[in-house]
Length: 201
Image 1 (tube, one colour):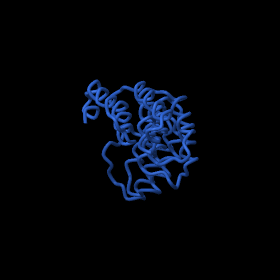
Image 2 (image 1 turned 180 degrees about the horizontal axis):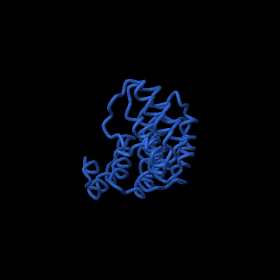
Image 3 (image 1 turned 135 degrees about the horizontal axis):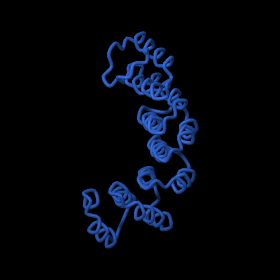
């Protein structure tokens, strides 16, 4: 409760005096520390859990520590933890994609999705990868992500807007026109957020 509300010192005091701590207790601290910007403390607590015999890290634990790495921008640490896991859930892949994407490692982030399997990727992990493409202007990866997002959700016409705006920023006006035609063919007549840049001039 305390760490969830950002009262970290009190949460630490209570955590240290508890006689019995299960994995849920450890997870609450690790995830709470990560979400409130205490990445170093979250990572240290994760390693303490690994070394001890009170509990075994579970899926939630890894989401927490990967989130800490994501907030801190620790690519090498996050990658090492991710690779040490025996199995990855979609939440772990999303954390890793977001971490790599924020740090400009767009191609590596795409490889994480490929290793998981494009068919397993949901709109959350694909959205994280597309956000990275927008920030770092990686049109080539964005094209593949948009293609998969439309396979997952054919009615998600907003991704047309994202890709078209990226084409416009790159001066690829023929691709802008092609994408507008694809939108019309898909029945998307008016999409809020469309760039005001005219690709026909």
